[in-house]
Image 1 (cartoon, rainbow, N blue to C red):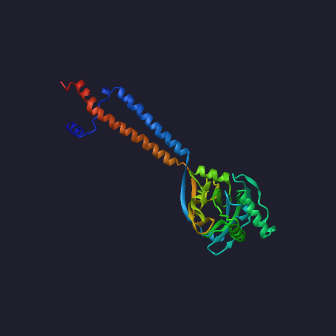
Image 2: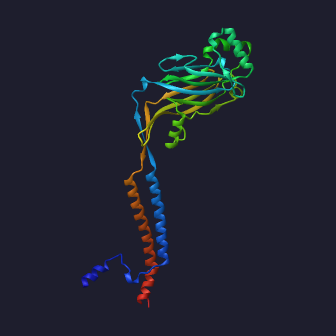
Image 3: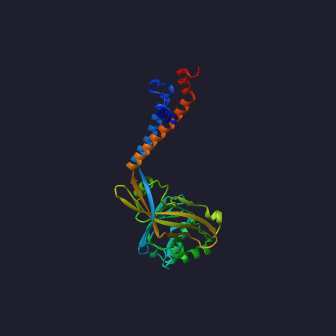
Length: 333
């Protein structure tokens, strides 16, 4: 019996006997607080379980150089006539194509940017007729909406809007009419690959991306006034092929890009889009919530909250309630 009492004295977690325990306002408050906190945290875990999370990784694309890439472009030239617009493309394997046609359409616009009509076929006109047509468009302060798509090789290079295919016309106008080209423009659309605006919008929202194409609706205006003549603009693009996969197994290939722009006075008159296509592609995968993660987190929430409130309760018991208990036993008299 003495051995048992000696061992019991070593107990550092002495308990109040059951017959002396009673309900209290403090206990009620701690219980309500525990249920509220644990309920909110577990509710948050239920939300995490029901939602999805995104995993991303970088993979190497070894087949890139054997492919052509579609460019979807819509640029409004505010004060530059369609008769002088030439879109050229050039790459690092020395392929240079001037006045690319493919699926591009040039639409004449008035000085407010509203469309007039499609540009007529210039190949049916002689040099003097082309010069006169351009002169009339300049006098009327016309602009040009260049829209459509064309292909580029998946190697570093550039495409640019200039007058390179209409050198004779521009030289004649500059000499006789003192014409000074103004390359102010608005990029309404620039994307790569098989364009699907609805799909891209859905991907951007579902995967939490702020943007896929950073040059959409970028404006470069008042270039002639601010920079004088000659002037140009360089848009430097870094293109990253990306694949987005949903939990259903559906996947979409999209070409993201980031861009930086620089205006410059002097040099070559053009709006140049210089691009580099990465040798890697980003792989994004949407994953469902994990039951194991939910159960572990819920157990941690319940155990941790209960432990903290128990420690708080013990401090109060040792400091205040223990004195009341001793007083009831007559140990304070």
